[in-house]
Each structure stands twice: as structure tokens, then as C-alpha cells.
Image (cartoon, rainbow, N blue to C red):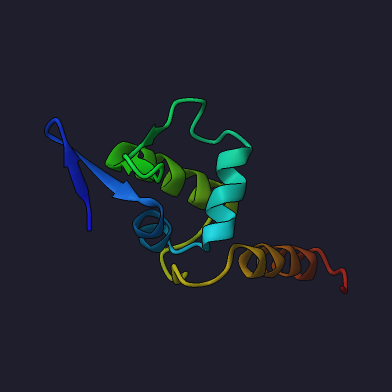
Length: 97
């Protein structure tokens, strides 16, 4: 359930990765790589909180990397989609895998 602090709505980690359709590990890995920068907010328990803008930024990063078309499901794993894209490109270029 989202948390409101000083009029701003924040989402916990589980809410963020579910909204994005990625795994928790993928989200943590991307955060470690600095996709959102250095600034982060945590609640009193130390849990990471995300703004809607941060979730939108992550969403754009996902779809720019995957070059997802409108028929792709959000539940497909990042790895499987990347492999599918690679295979499609190889097939277009006449290469076998």
C-alpha cells in the first residue's frame, strides 16, 4: 500500500517491482548500477521508497533497453525478451543460433 509523506505518495520496493513487471532482484541490480542516481528515501524501518516519477523513469529504462512493442506482456522476464530480440535479429540477418 502506498505511503504518503508530506503530501507526496511513495511506493515500497514490492509495489515498485510489481508495477514495473520485473523481479525484485532485477530492481535491486538496477539500483546498484545507479539507474536512479544517488538519492533515495527510506521509511522508518529502512525500507526503500519510490516516487511515481522514479517508477516512470525505471519504466522508460526498461522499454528503451528492450525496445518493446505494444504486444509484449509486462510479465515476460527481461532476459527472455532480450534473447527473443537477439534471435529475431539473427533470423533477419540469416544467421542461425
